Image 1 (tube, rainbow, N blue to C red):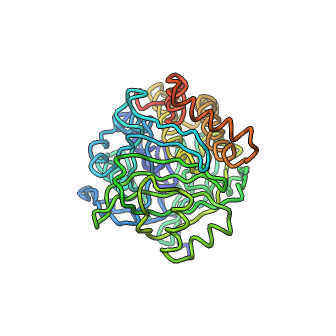
Image 2: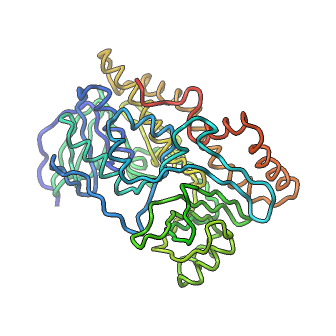
Length: 422
């Protein structure tokens, strides 16, 4: 039972969702405004908010992970969290791209583009823990958790939010509300923002696996007639075995079978599909699966409101683009909002938010198209296509300029992309 309505409180920005995207945005806004912006983060789950809670690292074999691209390193570095993240990530020192049963493969290396690494694989729990501990040190950021934003309504100036916490409601006014509550966003729905949903008629099977050969920082993107298999290098398991995160796109019934079958059967099937580049597969942990869909919000901005992260665009995991694109969106919004704040403009003005969307449109469309078409290109089996793919992978190996462009593109480093420098 909801009892009583608490007093009205005011913030510059309220972020609905304290996950990796919401936390990253809050940190960027705080840092680049010299802690001037008053920010509230509302999260459904409890968050330990005591300032002395230092990040805790518990590696488990089954940890879920994210691959951070080089563009994400450029955004996170100025925020002061990079040295801490570095303690427990695995750098991607090369990416081997191949197609099962076909000639033609290519290896991408950091030297091709003069970067320290092509990317970094990090456990989500560690990334989240480091971001939250950095947020706790900022005196311009407050948390309400566990709490839920029930309603957002536009006003003459900014927005009014109804927030439910401990069975009571409070009304909060803010200049800008950011919706970052995930792919199946309740707030997006509540505001009547439609989303285009395209099902790939496939399931992603996610698990961590161990094998006999050291990976030496090599990631694999292997295309098969059923869908792509990605293996991302992780630090060794507690038994000292080489470990990697597996993202395997499969027909739905096949995925269901592979989630349910015993470990030996699973490893046997994976070995068949992937081959022996990492020696023998010897262990698989908890298996998770989710349907592969592309979700795009039909509106990302309204007066006083921005939709971000998976609530704005949820992508096919093949090229690991989702969180990296969201970070670049955050960097762009931060640039625009901080500048408006310094110029004493209203932060929720529609013209302002539309300029954010226009500036991010190219990067978003390019990244969404890349993630969308890559798996499709490799699952069509007409021979001219497969010949072209083999030739294409071979050409990438001998054409430095094309290879450089491909790596820049995949890492979100291209002309006009948002970086962390303001």
